[in-house]
Image (tube, rainbow, N blue to C red):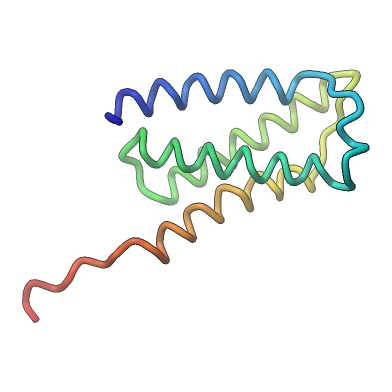
Length: 116
């Protein structure tokens, strides 16, 4: 896929995930404890993958942008009467994004030094 396609997918993902974070979800908590943390982790892992392919930004900028989005989501949820903000959710957001970037750094082949 081209960078433009990834950018469109990223924009659609942000809109869809923001809607889901704002939506009242009933009954999901009964599946297993801390399912919301798993969902936050997974969503931010996916967002990190798409963002990395969509934009040519330094690693730290991508992490800061996703952390800012995670903080914004928690602020939004705190303002909604049927949702609540959670530091644990923010930590899960950050951990999801950071996990992708850590795996990318570990598994990306390093360029050989041309002077060796």
